[in-house]
Figure 1 (spheres, helix red, strand yellow):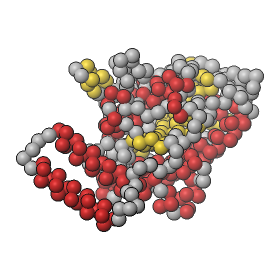
Figure 2 (cartoon, one colour):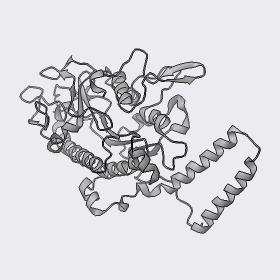
Figure 3 (cartoon, helix red, strand yellow):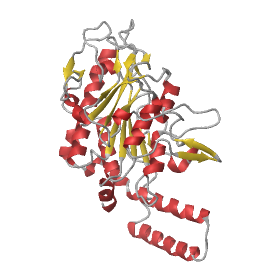
Length: 392
């Protein structure tokens, strides 16, 4: 509780809603009603004058004053696998250098050595596309890799054996501490310190198991989020960031609507609308919305053109993302696509500048260097700058 209270005063955290497979910007944040490419859904007015979003998102329409909407993404890559890698890092890997993804960077920048909770957690429990977007610490190393939950909502192998009582568990820990302190007297060793730190973190992870248990929440809160797997994982994400976890990604698959695009989005967008709106309200009520950024992102968007299967295909030339809370400028819109949604006609954004903007709003210098050997490696590629209009 003391750590959560301290973090609440200013430590930023991120919840990423990863819309795996590529959600359609035309059925969410950038509708084109009346156009041949527009589809059957209307655009509705939001609480921001002049800003319209899809009628499939009536709850978010009431909360866009908290949201920064980016409509001008042009990321130039329509391949699921390599595009997912790019959109989790803000750049492509080099042949001889694997870059850390956003979660690993935030674990490195905002994690605490004395933390009793994980630094980076990712949920991806559907099977479609899971292998295309794994968490990856890259050159930062395994210390900043994710706790990946792919089978269920609770981490495996962190619970003590049933054959060991609580008293036994505590006494073993106390004995280990005693012997460790005696051994450490008069000695200096990086390996010894690393082993001690790792042991403390494992012990902390075991103690954090309840954070993943939504039965700890009252029934009203659970009903408020909903009973779907995505809703429950987002509720767990809120519990984790409230406890101090710097980065949680919740993957929701599968938006890859090459066929029956409108039926797919008629099913999935209302769930996103409800869960995201509930998360915003919950964070706001807890005094956390200024400190927790909600990012909606995917590997790309969907084509304005509608194919013979009434689907939309992969499209990276003019699509959308949102940033909510955590320093993002609510009620803002950046970027504009043409009348049919084929190209960006104003304020184009690439992956690098999006990530530089996220880092800046979190209080992280995007030009900070890490070092791989003697080589300096900045958080974003040289020459990339944050979007000035979207940074407070």
